[in-house]
Every structure is written in C-alpha cells, then in structure tokens.
Length: 132
Image (cartoon, rainbow, N blue to C red; front, side, top):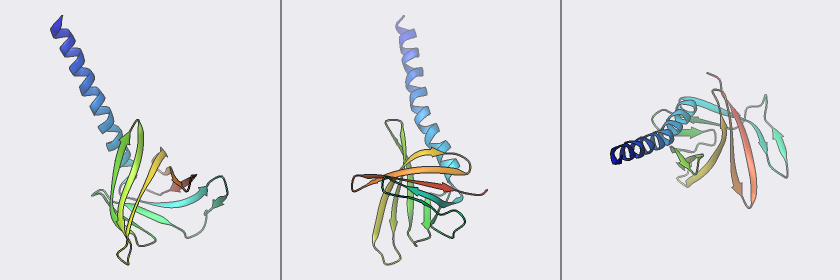
C-alpha cells in the first residue's frame, strides 16, 4: 500500500511539473522567431486600430532576445504564475536607459496574440498578429 501511495504521489509531482514546463515551452514556440505587429490597443478610455498602418512591432528570437520598433533590445522570458503566463522583458533603449516591462498573455496562437498590462490602475490590452 505504501508503494502505491509513493508511486501515485511521484506521478502527480512529475505530471504537475511537466505541465508548467510544457505550457511555457509551447508558448515560447508560438512566440519565438516571429515579428509581431500591433493591430489594436484597447482600454476603458479608448480603442485604437492600427490595421493597415506601419506601426509598433516586436520580434522575439529563439535564443531569448528581443528587439522592437522603438529600438528597445534585450532579453525576454516566459513565466507562469498561478496558471497565468507572462512575457517579462529586460531591455535597453538606444540611449542606454533601462526598459523593463511585463505583459500578461491572455491568448496566443500561431498568428495572433493578446496581451495586457496595468498602467496607473488602467488595464490595457494589445492585440498583435504575425505572418509565418
């Protein structure tokens, strides 16, 4: 009986840990090696479309580096906390100013991603798309 309990508990730990790692790895595979273009920015005060316009983009490389259209370059990490995935970016502007920020990933697929962040108590969503 004791062996069955130990085996069951070990399986639970293994599959619980691998689930977190798998969701991070899967999200990383969807995100990486693509340039994501901002299509919409939405919050309680405004809704703005950027469809058909040259606008903000961000590129995520497979090696964990990132570069955006504002010239911010640095590193990114996908993290999971309480079943919530986030992109944490540790970047630097062209002038050498630290630019660290965090997006909560609300939805991600092969060619569309919705992220959100809080600023001055206001939740803002950004919707990005990419081509393969």
